[in-house]
Image 1 (cartoon, rainbow, N blue to C red):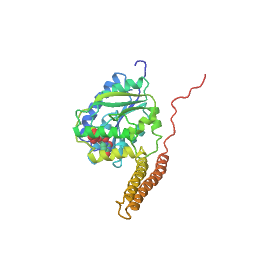
Image 2 (tube, protein in one colour):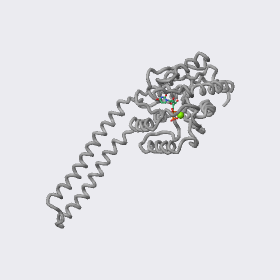
Image 3 (cartoon, protein in one colour):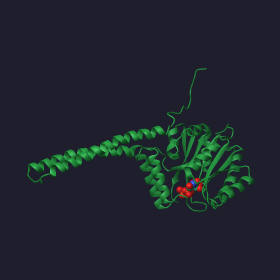
Image 4 (tube, rainbow, N blue to C red):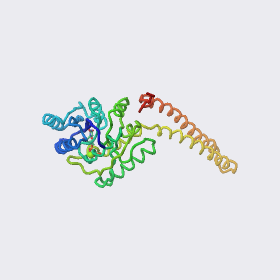
Length: 320
Ligand code: UDP
Ligand code: MG
């Protein structure tokens, strides 16, 4: 890990109504920055970029005071509450102008900042993306743990590649970030997008603690919306399921048909019952298959309009 010049790191912190947590966070982070600079892990001109995501409390005035107190802080104010993912994007986009690497972390410091040492070591060892992964969830409520578990497992089932127990605490190198910023979709789900980049990645494990102050800005409603966002902005599987359901119905129609005919022959059927039975199942199946077919095209349109880069070149070798 020796023989590297310290990288200019930007730590991007999205803040929404964080007037209570921010002063504590800023103090902890300032001290931490000094240590990291002293240990040669951060370049002295590294910065913290505090993104105010349209807070309704005094967050922005806290940020302005911090910026005047030390050159380590920079502030970016969004005009309206754009949501965590968009606030992060805004911060990373800004930081990309100067940073060699960007680390994103929440304002409540639930994620262990010391894991950043591991991030930097992996970065200097050649990783372009380093995921912070929670090793335990003991401080979360049972409910949060269970829903989170369902979230990651469900995502995987839906074909969205995510890193288990990794949220948005990660390091991303300059070149990986500039590729990520080429993604033009507006419905962001960074946890799904970053793994599609490729490059050399690494994981650093840490224990997650409780919020320093204030309360969660992610109530159940937002969590559910986030999960739906994750699936619908990544996967066409739900649409495919319609077609699958159609085939199942059509198959069932054959079975029901045999049963109805047998009943008819055995003389157990009321007149009209057989034909009604058959048509309901057959038409139901055909309709679902037709819907699924339309869905296939909608799925195509949907992946097409995202205009994601088709590929990312990592290296090009020529003989010298
Ligand atoms: N946040 C944001 N915009 C929002 C909601 C949250 O920028 O609309 C920020 C918030 O300030 C924090 C981070 O996103 O830095 C994560 O939020 P929180 O800690 O409340 O989520 P939890 O850890 O409870 O899932
Ligand atoms: Mg939190």
